[in-house]
Image: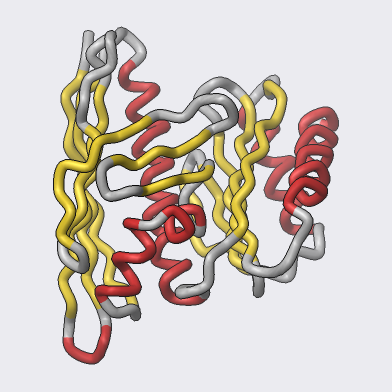
Length: 229
């Protein structure tokens, strides 16, 4: 079995089209709301996840109006493409429409599609949070992968309890079955149910930090939390 898909998200943000363009079409902008570390050169978008750095050719580049990239098939036929459409409104606000489409091969496409769709919903909502609260500043990104969990119900209960008891001094801005997003005064913190069976923490921090030390601290935090569960 396989699945052809197309999904659309629409965001109204209190930012002008040029600020929105910088958020979706530059490496520092994307680093402030997505995961991994991204480079954009006008011809391709490259996002590094550890040692894995997929490259997506740019297929439309209209600064302040339209950006599209990806959609090229992998050897197994899998493909995902993204299109961002920017429309300025009176008063300096912007409507951003994001369209994702592609093809998922294999018998487990439904599980992959669910994880991808819920993850996209989190990241695009995070984009709105970034534009509304932190832009044009750029965040320092890092991603932490937790160990395998035994059962997701107990793991999510432990995570929610920890977030409720820890002194994060922030508010939950989005949640769905696979994600929680928390905004603090200087960070966007994202907690996701990884498709491979462990939590993924992907944070962007908008203050001066030692990224390596902060990443290690969060790694210890999620390792300890998962071990308790």
